[in-house]
Amino acid sequence: MNIQEFISIIEDEFDEVETGSLSPETSFRQMEGWSSMHALILIALVDNHFDVLLTGEELRGLNTIQDLYDLLETKKA
Amino acid sequence: MIKSKISNISYYLPSQVLTNEDLVTLFPEKKGELIFKSFGIKKRHIRKPKQTGSDLSFLAANQLFSEFKEIEKDKIDFLIFCTEGLDYKAPTSASVLHYRLGLNQNCGCIDMPMGCAGYVYGLSLANAMIVSGNANNVLLLVSDIPSSVIHSQDFDLRCIFGDAGAATLIQATEKNGIGKFVFGNDGEGAKNLIVERGSTRAPIDSDWIEIYKEEDEYLAHGKMEMNGLEIARFSLQRVPTLIEETLAKNNLNFDEIDLFVFHQASKFILSALQRKCKIPKEKFYEYYENVGNTVSCTIPIALKHALLEGKLKKGYKVMLLGFGVGYSWGGTIIEWD
Image (cartoon, rainbow over all chains, first blue to last red; front, side, top):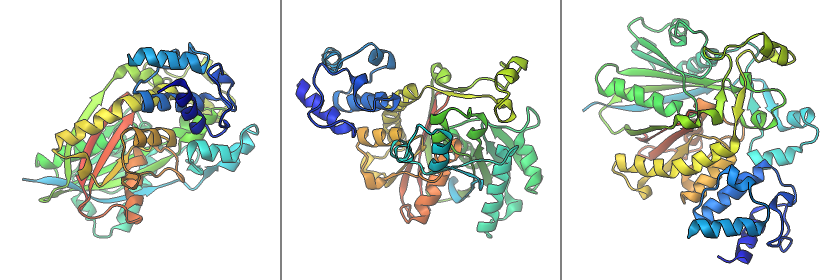
């Protein structure tokens, strides 16, 4: 999965986020309507697509979608 | 060889409800439709002041006896009462319930203070009593009153949890009924869902009363703390394995299961699990919209509704999984008769 595909999945999953509004540089905590619930949704989404179960701590240490994608690439490898 | 089966299920919900509209009044910054969208819940039932878990179980048991006139109350020879809100330190609440219900004196009574996995554990004890030949008619009462340990300002917990009681009669049978069980535990997760204060290790003291004096009964039963993210991670990590283990223990394949009835933890956890485990939607039963997460009561309430809706039929193989507070988990497969 490349980062654009990853972004499409996130846009698809979060109802509040419009398609095409996210970029690799987007800080996910700044996404429309971000809440603790969205952290859960993101963890489940990543688990579903990458088979990686992130910890809350790992997620807290990340800022942008690119950071998240990079971490997942390392974890997968 | 003697086996055991679930013969009857009834439940009781307190009449007072907490609706999403009520929550919006209490938390004006929230929106009712968003509450429904996030939690999938419209209302939760809330106990009357001072009502205990055993009161709700008493009412659920009476509902069982009036709904199923064929039940011979005098033949009940074991009573298991499961709750995280016991009446007393001693005696067991089951003893008191036994007396209130007017059961035969030749009946063993035990309490089982367990939560999310409580119903599955209760079934396993009932099954063990029956297949060992030590009892024939086991009454399993489960009830929980999470509202008694939720801080009035804890929005998420007030959205998720509701109070309830449920009664199940488990009887000896020669047919297939309750299958084999898988159990597991990881006490490292205890801190992620806990009601720490109000019992032996950390009793309520005057400082506590001072802090919570504005709360109902100054939160004298303790205060539930939940790390929702960790609980979700635990569920996503553990439940897929539990499914595999439960199938293997019962020599069944995934496709042979007709209905999956899990502890109704939350809309989020259930839909994530359904997707992750690729359970066909029509086989995945969910029931929380009108009751919320009722802790040990979610599975019997869901079974009852599945039955009423015609989604649970005679001969169906049903996987029951309980998981959560502890962490503790358990699974079994029943064949519905």
